Image (tube, each protein chain N blue to C red):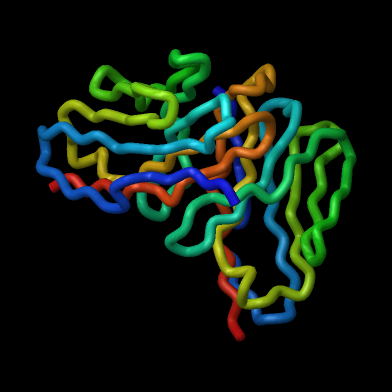
Length: 114
Length: 111
């Protein structure tokens, strides 16, 4: 079945440092989504990337989708304590149907030290 | 802002007992899901539900699990005979097109 690998598992940074998490799929994806889960919270949708090679920015967050549509990354510039949480990439099932399940990566747990 | 609501927030049950986890998806959403997350691990898909029937289920979703949408608002997950390994956070999610909206989750503890 489809596998989505995400690294690193943990990342500790000082406030103000940058952070990047990487996601790789075993298969070519129709799209990829990113979610953030605060400690004790639930996953919250951040973005969906569809086009190969696309780069999208949301304030300090930069998302990329690889040219081959098999990898993606999330970069946070100048982290703040509010960025603490687990960042998951999630891929739709093969075929990318609207109702399809999401296969989540293992997540990267970000800790920001003030 | 509309949200997915789940009850209870925490359920403790004895092994072998039946539990029903309840969810109220966002009202105009069409697709409904249950996911679970064992403590410290990734979010795992259990089942998707569309047009009043299961559209897909995972290997985890065996005969002990069932889902229902008994009326126009509720969406339930039943575990008939709970096992210790069913202890996890269970998230309900719903969506229209792209973005999946997750509920706050029910923490199920099987003792």
